Length: 303
Image (cartoon, rainbow, N blue to C red; front, side, top):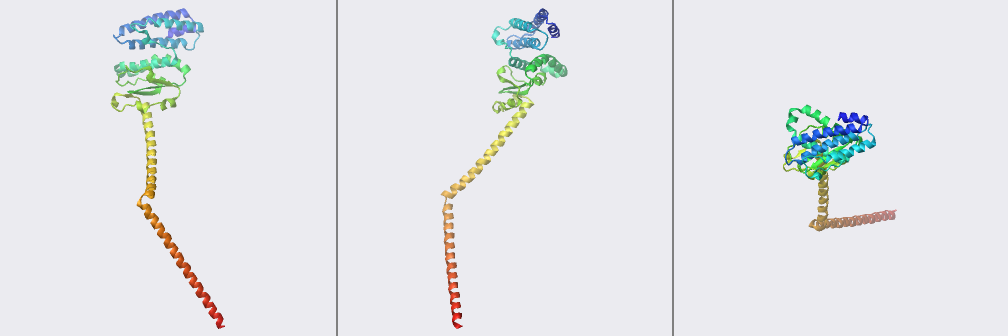
């Protein structure tokens, strides 16, 4: 990596090609030596990582002219066809856009964490340093275009949400789950953290055999917040329905039950009583008025 970067500064195309040829031969030999039969996916991940790394170094800012940059990229794509042990080249198809590079890096890191469980436990600090060196160039390249990049990995048995750089630099061991069915379609990348959080689906969360799943702390925290919000909404709706039901029952009782007749009867009797009382009061007032007039006439005559 350092030799390539040094020659980039001097825009030395031929020297860079010779370095790539030599290193590519070493990389392919390592892959052949460590290749496990019927494990083409692993071979693809390792070879693609090397080409992604080359791509990131060459495309990163430097003194390399545009013509030499394009020629180097073209040479790299040609050399990619020398991928060993892979019968179906389309299975190892390598897109060079940023999203594809990011997603390939995430998949490789997940698989490496599972394969390297023992070294991580034994040499935790050394492994963290190894990760930092392994991903620094690719992270620097993507950061040039994505200032803050976040990732979400989500399917039936995995839920991880984090920043892209934090995830690749993390040596937290992956749960012991089958990663063979995990694909780039299960990975979402975004520069909007809130949007990524809101896209987390409770339906994806598997409560059955939960211990077999793999969820990081950020994902669990967001799931809990979502579940609490939904519970609060359900409680409000339940209370509203209960109150509405209570008033509906009162309306039905008032309109159709014997209580309505009883209430109407009581109201009618009260009206009749009030009317009788009013008549009696009027009659008494009239009688009092007559008596007063009689008394006044009598005393007037005596004088």
